[in-house]
Length: 216
Length: 216
DNA sequence: TTACGATAAATTGTCTGAGTAATAGGCGTG
DNA sequence: CACGCCTATTACTCAGACAATTTATCGTAA
Image 1: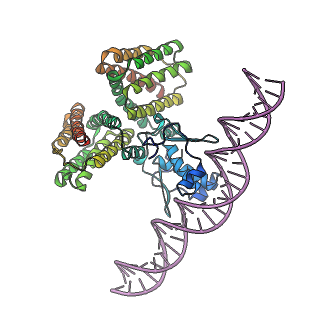
Image 2: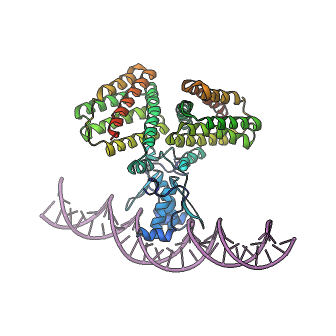
Image 3: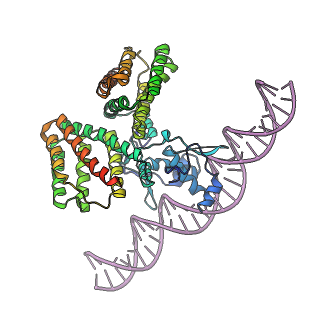
């Protein structure tokens, strides 16, 4: 958190292992294992004699789920959130288009089932939100592209966290179901171009909602 | 490598820490630090009594540069490579479109300079390839989107490794410079739509080249 | 026979203290 | 001024012990 919040800036060196572990009241080995995880995510680099330095932000694995979570938790800049939604707007419609080309009928049935569950429970309940996630997950699965799945689920989780952290106060102003059904219909019958268009619409509207609740 | 190659399948448990570290002739702490890095990348999960189990592939951070490198090094499936290029085809044109909207004149000058260096040295030399990378990096920088930069540089590095690993034998059959200049012109003056189109063309042709060298 | 609660065993997690290896920075010499 | 040597600092590795956690087992009672 000190690193992602900028309290320790890239280029700065952390206190040496002994001092750091004492500050945190843990053993040196526990501290080292923690630092190794940060190193694995590209956030720090360790070298003998020099110590452990915070890496340039461009070297961080920003798409790592943990890193994303930490950034969001630490109060991300507005610019970062814009970037997050921008990326979603690039990836999700493309994923929908691929799904329209490749989905199996079993996957289609699965999507319908998820939407029906969403309809029953609404987004106010945890079950409803789970059904929403499931719908989007099946779309990703239908693309048959593991990398796209990995990327998109990271983004999806991050976006959900932003709404959990920031929203809270206002109700969802709009019924999201019709948009979801339009995406479904497009993937079922409309072809890739139509799937892309409807998903752009869905993401765009979700963005509007979130933007509203972020302005405060 | 045992994990990414599938020699140890998701769900399987690794030998316990003492046996594993002895097999590798390292101390338990060194082994634990290594495993912690894999855990940070989502590839394994450790729990007392149960041991360390390989996570489901859907939980891996496939976009982590290390994970990508390991997968490519271990001989990726053709399907995986298709997915990689597919993702590139989604991301890079979108990045070019954003760059066309937001680039500063300084960045534009930087791009021109990189292309001229590329022209001087050609892609046969390391300097020429560095200039190529620089050109693409400046485009990313011009998008002003950190997440997009992180994603695209991971993909870019991965693609370079595939060509390094597989290509080797044949010369580049085509002069890539005209395509690069078209992208440059579009970013300089043509607007986002034209930038997207020219970048699609560039990536598509690069894909063709690589596909050719992969079929053997 | 089944359900449940106490017990045991296996494994990771943590801690400590020591020694090793690498390297940046200073020092001296040519 | 350039180069090579030296030293101190730091991360890196190791070994051994103990703690915490959780699964599996076993016995007891319903």
